[in-house]
Image (cartoon, rainbow, N blue to C red; front, side, top):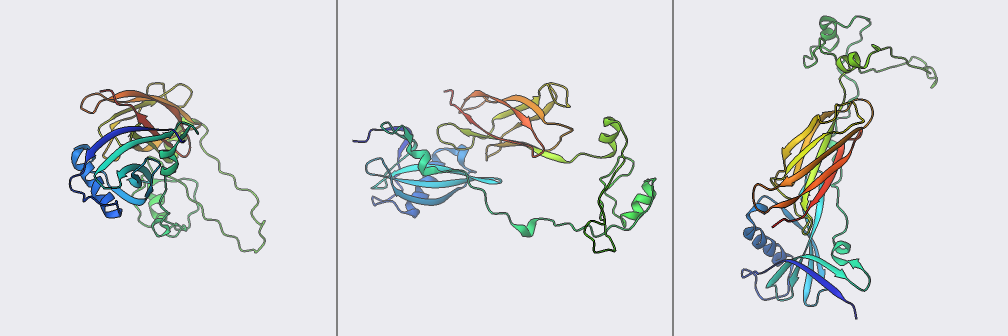
Length: 292
């Protein structure tokens, strides 16, 4: 006989639901009732995915997704066959030592990329210019009136190279000579920015936590002085706090920090943050444990 342990985090009678086997509509209605009992989830949008009989006797398991900007987080709920009881939690098979809730939930999903929203810039709009003295005047002329670039602060150089021959090896090398010092290069050649993002969720329910304080600073070993503040903010309704325009200079930037929620209920234990900001940014999900 299979041995199961049910870690029930929330149980309630959904009086709005009729005494019948759960369907997609009743599952959605049950989640709306759950949201009404938890005002902090009011802004969370649960998207129904599928439902099937669960390992828990007389219960169905339903999978929803919570959208968090660039991804979908799975959330599993259990609904009784008579559609009167719903609970959130983890179902563990003790014999096989498996988390059956996690097996049904699956992984996070990423929506398909909408190619129509990607700017495939082909370099059009730039005039030919031959000069070794990029001043505000001749730069403005070369950019055909584009004024968002300030030559006094530096600009990004974009090259479009053409050749009159069909020989594919006509151009074998390209060299760019720049100012030698790191300080001058940082000033004249602005760095591309990366995103520093932290998603905070409840460890028991995987639901987003709003109002958690995320504090990230530079650690030793990078270009920034240790202790330089990189992110200091609070999570939104999707559990996200981010710095969308962090300038990464040189190698990876080690970071350290913490996330807390101790000023308003529900309270959570402090969780540490550590890692590296790379050329693709920093993106992590932190699971917080209730402290009530």
